[in-house]
Image (cartoon, rainbow, N blue to C red; front, side):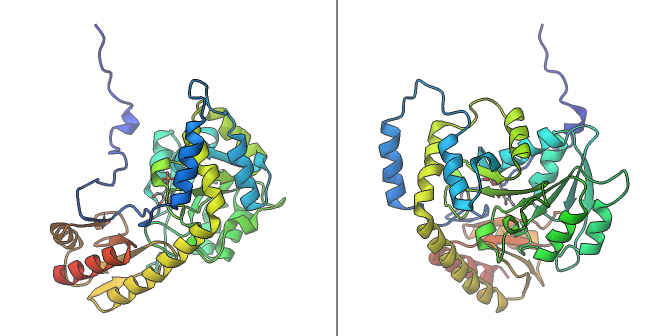
Length: 356
Ligand SMILES: Cc1ncc(COP(=O)(O)O)c(C=O)c1O
């Protein structure tokens, strides 16, 4: 008789990574774009899908999509790897460069999937910290990456950092890249909101610098599941070697390629969300909460007089769903709100006022 064996003992403690998909009228919990992609993109995609030979596998190396992304960034297609969301990009990096006997360095609190994917790929974890403004101390970071015989194979940075909001200063990332013995992966899921990009640091002196991006946030295409990295061709080949064959569907490839025809609309969306972020930040400043500055499409805040968890529940009672980080290490009592439409932001601010 067959049996279900126990799951890998190193996975048993992990609950996985879930943002609860609770029903709510105002959903500001997963940092998606509140605005839909352009109608013209939708029509172009529908027309292109009508011509797809669905009985054939998709183009395995996603040539046209990679060439279009290479054009966007002024690099070659050999420096681009695409996958189903940047999470699959991160997983491919750790399958290729992490694993048993290897170590990944993260600076907590940061995007939970960096440590989660390290665990599920059997990669050892080194945890760095941040100061009370959630900044990485460059000297501490350089000391951590330079530890003799214990340096990380992969160092994760997240800029702007989720869930705290700030972009890492260019000098910090440059110092870490100069000292790191292995890959430095800069997760720029919110890159277009930030003041600068680690892509600017790429060059012959930094073969281990990897920048990851996603279509889920600024491109307003979370449902399409598409992310990519820009890196040395050696890194790209290693990711291609570990990812499953034909992992990127023809629909995903088309969706991404056609989206790149609409760069101005994406930039206008980013500008609009940034303006709304200013309005939400001003609204929060009038309430009894501490906030942290944001270079992304969300704001981290902490109620001063009420328990974060209770405030989160009270917002949900008013059908406003935000991210409850109040029990996460280093984020005691904190909540994170995604910037929504004007109407959603007004609903959030009113509900928060009542909840506080
Ligand atoms: C910092 C960061 N990286 C990566 C991702 C994953 O994005 P994707 O939808 O491309 O898998 C997210 C999603 O929230 C994120 O916040």
